Image (cartoon, rainbow, N blue to C red; front, side):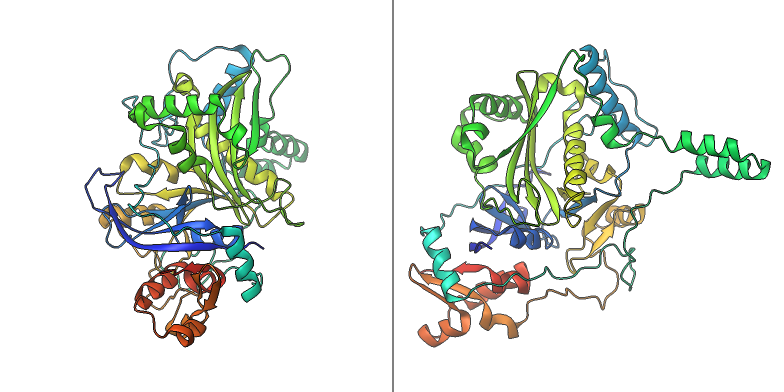
Length: 482
């Protein structure tokens, strides 16, 4: 287990990437020198998110556009009609090389054909990169500090704090475990009742067989053939492999996407800026014996169409999920709805890993911002859940929750006033918070007070500890150097 080392920056104000308001996006920020994969899993389950080495958590009850962490249960996910059309379109293009003359219509469920395409044909806003604070982290030797922390207090692997998996809105009880058994469709149920009345068992068997052959996500993605006009190859590359993640083709694609889709200033799209946001990561590749084959850490999924790079998905693979960090693609291939196609590919990765690592079954999509209509598309994936910003329990994203968010953009989600955060940090936990005092001194807060007396910055340490929760406050190393 690696030692997580962080420096808390405190409260931040910046321009909002969703409503474009100035200094109204309110958050907490910290620099992560290094993060253990389980620590980061626990952090995102408390509303944190990373961009490069910078981690941030919105002050949802104050900020202009509350952001709710959203995840999809990869084993409960069901393809929508729109999803199927996008997959068929890609398969036709690979098979015949033909582009659709125009996008197909909606599927009758109110969603456009591609998540990144609006009715006007313009690209919607993807999750913007946060504005980094005008601060520099303390300079430390990360490996040396990690060794010091391990020698001071050997960390033990703790199970993440328990959470109620998916109670209904306002429920006082934890929900029963989610069943992986597919629900029968109404059409299938009607046919089975009809056949039962007729007593025609042979016909019933035939009908059931036909209906049970509905194509799965894996079926759609396994339709490649050597006779296809085009071949699509997806390559998983460790983020630390900079020769591949920062190859000329990747840099050119990133610049083309940012300029065309987001109207970014080309002069600002340097190699250093791309590395800072999409390549550098505090997560180091870990390969435990009970983990996935590729291990935990940060990766790029590169989409190669024949010999041309057309998309890159930046992801983190963690003990319970695949977390989407960013996705960029060649605008010339927008007709393939690559944003949605990439999400489906990432869900397929979750399903593949879950076959060997059952605990890793979720797909995290970042933030759901209901107050920003262009960002609501994330909630269209089936089996999606939102994180309560106060009790850190997961709730199914239902029409009832959507209606409440229509009424008031900030919602507790858990309507039980007695429900509490089971990983809540209390003052009685302060003594065990681990601090780095200088390059050679690491101590818990109790020892720190004995050495140097009460800290004038104790309120900041308490604020940080409450935000990361008791488990991470005791397990991570807080840089508190003068």
